[in-house]
Image 1 (cartoon, rainbow, N blue to C red):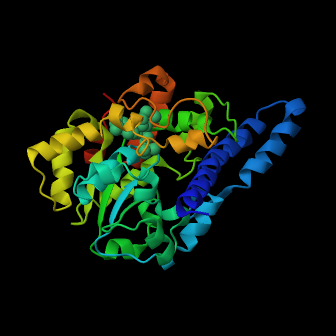
Image 2: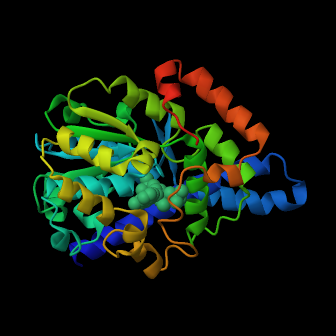
Length: 334
Ligand code: A3P
């Protein structure tokens, strides 16, 4: 089996795992309020799906990911590694493509020769020893993606000189994006309503847990010299300026022409139609159905999904958990 096939199979397995986790919790919640006639069937389904679940330090994770987290002490960190970190559905793919190209000298021909998931490996999926990571990410410096909360990121990553770029997206759009992503997973066949998924998201009962805790941990680390904290909304409003900021952080000087070229290369339309960026293998391999992985790429899609009660519930939670008002003030709903 080629490395590419190996990774795609593992990748697909974990994607299914994510959705299974979410769907499992959905059934769990529903079981408590459904009538006895449908309860047995839902419990059976729930038991099947909950078998994917595990927690680490109180954070829900797909079981395989949790097991990999336990093995991350084997991960060999290099000083020149760059980590792209986020809560799921926050623009990780977009940022990964930008960072990869900056780190690798804007060689778009090379970038198009391999799918993004092979150029930017996913730390907690399979990369738990140096040989695997070396085999899967042959070009240095490595750009590595992770959705782990800071509390689960191996301390040696922070203790070395490697850089961490964290991207936050407003939680309303994250929740909507996460919902549609979950529904795309063919094997799971999740058909829940957005309102049900919202409740799970609110309780942190989705893979990678509470959005508030995730962003708060990285916000508190933002003043560390090797940490850059940015937002999806900033990138969306002013990609040129944000690419410059990312380039500066990575200590790569970019000419205005290069910034412009990268901005175009990583625009939503370009990435959506680029097989090396758009995760089309998920659909081609039959693991997802329906819409593309790069779905809408806009700020404010929450307006089509959130009612006033949902807005109030999430706002209350954000206000309680994010005590630092400077963090609250950069969350843009637009
Ligand atoms: P939507 O579902 O709202 O469209 P992640 O990569 O962390 O899984 O995040 C996926 C979200 O980022 C999706 O949001 C996707 O469309 C959006 N995205 C990916 N590439 C993008 C780009 N180049 N520009 C804007 N949004 C992008």
